[in-house]
Image 1: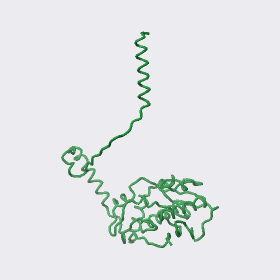
Image 2: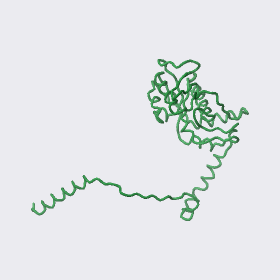
Image 3: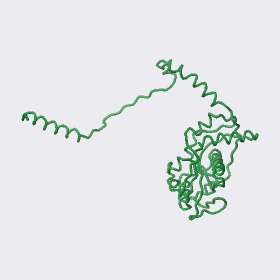
Image 4: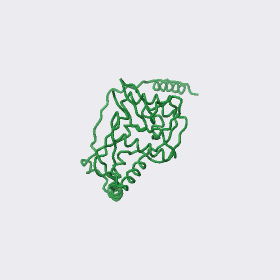
Length: 250
């Protein structure tokens, strides 16, 4: 091979090696806010808007259907709230019906409740706002010692949505924990109705992923809430919740 070509290849290899070892450093960054509002109408694709309009009308017709009445405004917050108590109670009931026997408790993460349900009309769209994800109900079998750890986590964060469980929070610690009228038993296996999201140990509820057994219901949480509201409305009942001291901070 031509010596000049060898020298060139050698220099090229050295250059590539030097390039691959270079450490890049960001010295400056900028950002621009782009408003997603009527100011963008002038650049909107009119044909695409025309295509979407009938779909928008169809979706709006479905979402605006009134399916029930809320007796009062329900919001989600710790240590317990009207909204989280209602959701947890509905999940506990749905889990028990699916299993054919009483579920011990249910768990709802406050962060998963994405809106407020105001007093008055409840529409289909409002439940989609509350539960915009495709999460489903699952039943878990969890050992008591793992459940005790989870409950201590609830105390640390100031409460989560629960049903079938009563507890007090004292200096960030869970005390006087009662499940189905009995103190928690570390050796017992408890059944828990919750979401598939939490069953994966998400939202820092890692203990839920340490289950002894898991059954997927394949029923969306949103559908459970919609069905519950429709059935209560058919009975002439308004949707209501209550604060009953299931989680108290001393």
